[in-house]
View 1: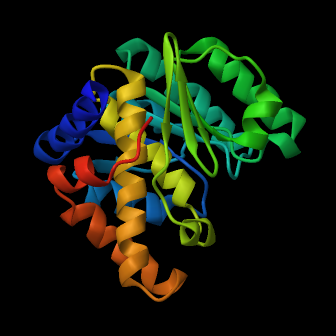
View 2: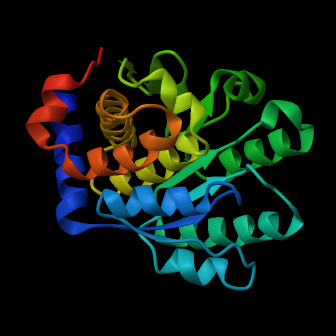
Length: 238
């Protein structure tokens, strides 16, 4: 499958060349997201200061916007970062965490989609609430993860149930997709690379760990150690 090969090449390029991702993410996810990016060859920055966010975004290669602990200060930082990202035409991943529980959060997510062609990464409930917003591509996570883009879809069947019992896994996935989009030929290939890498690493970590506590360090190790042949062999993509 040509697209899978392109996705694995994007992962290899990230490991070789790196990428700086500015992450405006929720307070629960910051440390874990930074560790995942570092394990994959990317460099994170995490400031949510409205005075600094645009400068850090301008110095980055991609931007993650995660709405998990949205407050007025973060909202201002997001607006400033989006303006900087638009000026540099950076890939932007939007994770509208729990927008189905907050009309304000859902409206803000739609506003972001109106401003920039984001890669939208959402679960099924979030995706349903947002409706048919404009995106560069749409990643819907669930039992099988689905990537929708102009001209087609991918489905990725990798992953393990223990991943749902570890905090901030989905948040970190969004950051990894942002990093991969720096090297991928299209947003959907960057998303495909992220889902495959994450899912295969999750399966490998689950096999070698005894539960959520030991899964976390094992997952970081697997992200680092998986090679291109393993990703190609174990990917389940349709």
